[in-house]
Length: 239
Image (cartoon, rainbow, N blue to C red):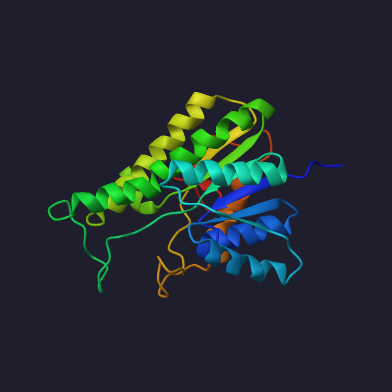
């Protein structure tokens, strides 16, 4: 009988994170929804309960070392371990009515720091807290949700804080994969495309299901799957 896997999804109470949590749970994976607001996490979980799923909800603020430790301890207590980590939680502070702000000339440094704390240091905190147990059992799947806005090969203007944070997240992915080395712990990053979420807006071209597809693929890779890669639609893309 195949071993039951376990997963923790940060920012799992809405958008792509919720879709990922739902799809993993439907696959029989014991899934924990990490949510900065416990109430919003529990509200999201109730949607899964109505279809017979049994997600766990943990209060999780990825900018807080204490919150990260407490959430992981709770999931480990309930599941025994964490096999899959999906670093989905993220913010985009550079917004306007026409979505064109945040140039290098005028982006506030405090916005850059706040964005980095969630989008880059948040995943780093999660990886540092979870990786030792993955190394101990010799299994792990870590998926970082990046963005095409973080691609150096196609870097453009505006959204400086967000672009910097996602480019740095890609660097974290490559570094973590290289530090871990080849084996059955995989660290990858992906771009979901422009998705209809609170962040992407209702004019976006993709559904949350389409945005989550590559996440699910990376979260359930076989032993011979890739590590240290950057993907969209299950295909490698340029850094």
